Image (cartoon, rainbow, N blue to C red; front, top):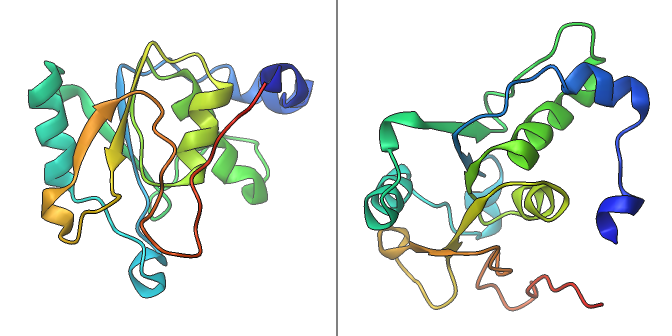
Length: 150
């Protein structure tokens, strides 16, 4: 039902639909996370996930706020939508511990999704992934898990 509520406008959808459907995308949220106390999932955890689940890590590309993708003619203020769209339609997504990639997966059509387990992990080197759109983005007292209910 959420997919029917949240759609891109026809103009934006036309601009973004020209993007290729990518094989394997990993979303890394870094930016302000360290200063706010959120765990930053290390690149090695994504590579370990590929090994654990038989994914070709040579095809892994990262989506990050530090290096956003762009589409010619799209308003610069809408650039985050490009990466959101890429995550929505990638064949396989290694989610970040972020609501950005959580919602991209909820609203998208990816075949497989893997999420980092950050609850109860004190050292980011110990973060591993599980298959599915696991809802926890942090292990901070004031942040709750994300849940969808019918």
